[in-house]
Image (cartoon, rainbow, N blue to C red; front, side):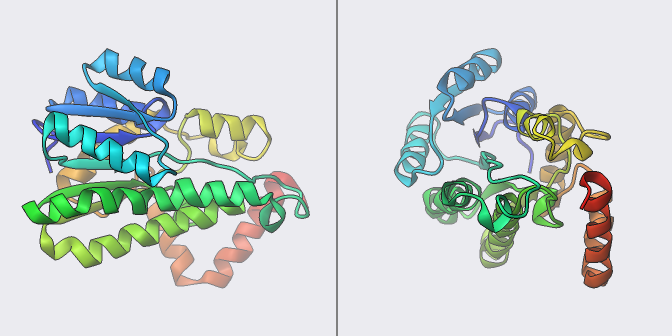
Length: 265
């Protein structure tokens, strides 16, 4: 898929990877770039800088996602590429009795709503028109944690695994009907989310070798052009994924050693 002259929607577009995607899509000559985010002021700043359109949207609310799609279609016509990029990292920590399964219910429910159901709502909103046309692309921003495991947040890992699984299901069910599905799974990226986790003491291991958001946007353009399902800005993730699948017990032993080395027992 080439982005030039296409209509693109990016959720979570006010900062981080989302903002970098919006800037890159505009530079590629997209006909319309819609910057959607709960942070309307941030979305407006990005949109103003690239000649795009800002829309306030809470992706955890299906009615707002449908309203976003209706508004975009009313202004630009068909949506060619919908990037479900918004995400949250909640419920993290190293204390096994306060994090993981013991994280507050709110952290779990919000993680599920934003990291999983938002992709479901996006698919429900855009697929009917795409299927009628026989073409369209959905880009899911998941995480390397969705292929491997995040060391600091169980809620993040579980919901990102679910996001990858949902994207895979879409690719199987609709791939023969002209719908292209890509799943973006970066590792460390210098975004407010990762830098916030590092400041909290649970994500510093991601900063060495972390990519700038613009490098992730470059990888997305290449992945969309080649119509790849997995877009891996960090090539080593593919190797890690294969090791995990090839010998799960060895992989788990290694991850336990890594966690202990980084954070202690």
